[in-house]
Amino acid sequence: MISARFFYTKTKPMLLETLKQIYAGKLTDLRKEIELYKDEKTIFQTREGISNSGGNLALHLVGNLNQYFGVILGGADYVRNRDAEFALKDVPRATLLKQIDDTIAMLDSTLSKVDPLVLEQDYPTLFNGETHTTEWVLVWLIAHFGYHLGQVNYHRRLLEGALV
Image (cartoon, rainbow, N blue to C red; front, side, top):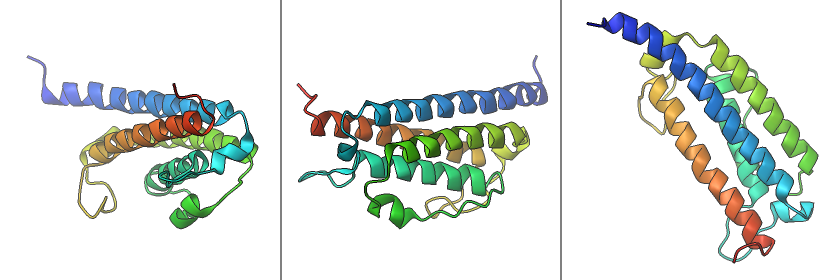
């Protein structure tokens, strides 16, 4: 019979490595989406019925991860301005790509330092007004990221006429 301690010590570090890989992959996908916009001006455009541009969603995702990983788990001095994530316009593509690259590096560094025991503990702050384990929050953030990544993809294809 495998002891619970054996299971815990083997699976939680694996989960942290899996999270690093998934987040790096999703951020790389976001980077590709921003690169695929043919016209840089389109990145921050909206149309009727579209409230958020691909650029604003990218800023939101970067801000979100820097806050919930960098600041709360890693102690970074990043200062998030959530309102600006949705209000800024015409941020240069190169700036967005650098922010995405910096976020990939921050996530790798932060998750490399997280003690696996932290995953079972309550996340250090309330999350959406509730208490959850750190593991729950980190997994939930992947779903949130995937949702917005799909919106960026759809935004790009819709505004550039690539939907058929």
